[in-house]
Amino acid sequence: MLIYKAFSHGSLSVLPASPVVALFIGSIAPDEAFKAASSAKQESTRIGYTCEADFFVGVQQIAKGVPAAARSLLRSAVDHCPHGFFQYAAANFELKRLDGSDQLGH
Image 1 (cartoon, rainbow, N blue to C red):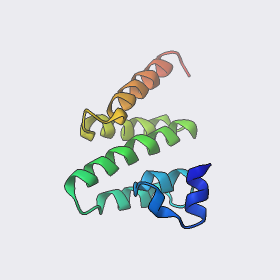
Image 2: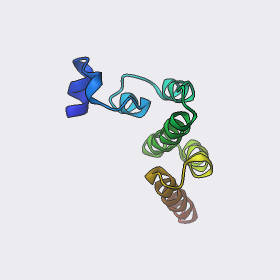
Image 3: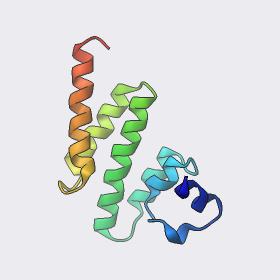
Image 4: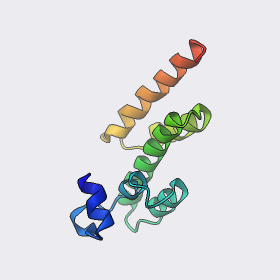
């Protein structure tokens, strides 16, 4: 709720600049999050933002019932996220979970 209030009142300075925050409060679409992530000036920031976008948009795809799209994004997160980012481990977990649910016929 704090994040939503800060964004809706223009108080962006109190939040990290990650496009994922804007994605989750609905102020940008997934394609805009990827565009913002890829346009970060510093390479390390670009890598981090892209990692976050891959993971969180992948999770959104799971919630929407689109496992094929989710799997592709989560695979990208596993392949490109720094191993110190929680998204790396979480993407691995979600991929295994998706593979398990596919085997169960869900």
